[in-house]
Image (cartoon, rainbow, N blue to C red; front, top):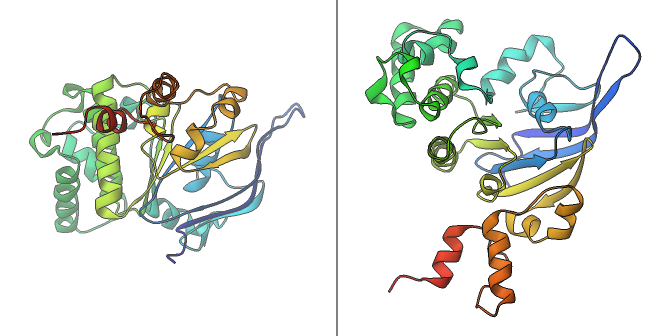
Length: 280
């Protein structure tokens, strides 16, 4: 079996305050993330999703426990850039991630900070823009782009660093539906074609339904874990956590209850269409 790329063991994180009212955000997490898999992490506000995301590339270090990326301990201050080269992150607001006035210069920014030779940087920029389908806008100014395109620029900048894992921390939450489809589709394609581990921190259940595995957090603990079909079939458990299954899963259950031939485990519109309106 392929070994995990990221291992999380007994991870605790507490936010310290100067007033003595410390806030525990993560409480004893154990987790393995494998190359080429798509893991969705869901949970209510304050469940610890974004805190966990920041541990995966060393933006935060454990209060106790450990996180290892490709065997590297994220607590080692001398290894922080090795960790961040392996795990790239894209955050919620695309405008906060743009640092250059031209798209291709923005994609090159991380590589330039690594001190790579100019020819290597040009090759990486070309490959990354091609991977996210933005070759035609390479000389555009970022403000000319849509929100979805801006997030794809951010992904291209991460790809240019040659990571082994891509973390999208609510990266589609500020986008319109078309932008959401652009960004998620690009990320899923890269994961499956390039073998990247993909971690989706999301509150959109329709996005989580497209993952290989879903992890549910509540109060800093893992409370559910399994395939999307397994997780989203547990409606009562999700309801107790104030989470709702994808609309397609709810509709599938209602259609099955009405006597239509919809089997358990249907959680996406594509699956429903395939069952109810198969091609001739």
